[in-house]
Amino acid sequence: MSGPTATGPTSVSTHILDTSRGLPAHGVALTCSVRAAEGDWTAHGTSATDADGRCKDLPPLPDGTTHVRLEFATEAYFTAPSTTTSSAEEQQDAPRVRDSGAFFPEVAITFAVKPGEHYHVPLLLNPFGYSVYRGS
Image 1 (cartoon, rainbow, N blue to C red):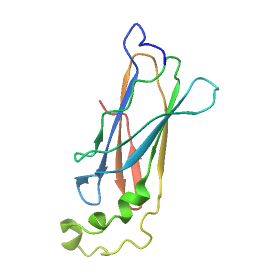
Image 2 (image 1 turned 180 degrees about the horizontal axis):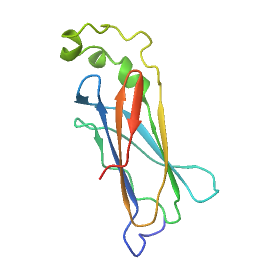
Image 3 (image 1 turned 90 degrees about the vertical axis):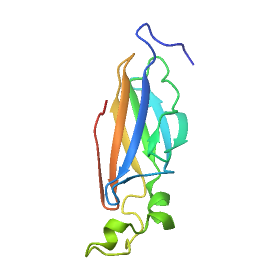
């Protein structure tokens, strides 16, 4: 792996909020892959979200990286017994059982990066949808 650029290393962090529960999504496995312009994807690191739904331990990106892909293993999270109901769901008329476990068994986010910048990519997740944005 090459050293940091003159402006510092390029880095990525993420966190997941389960919007159906209003809580951080703990224990979601993720894989980070990188590529240079028009190159092939290369696995770069793996991790899982902590109790606060955050993943801050991904390694700095190699020099020359132009694109990053974060792949989240959401099916295991949604089918785990601790995520099947919440106090918010119990207070609503929403179905108590998630019919398919996870409509999106995985979420892949691909984004462009520039040398020396930090990219924080939050994932807002629920059993039937998700959204992402560049955070700070």
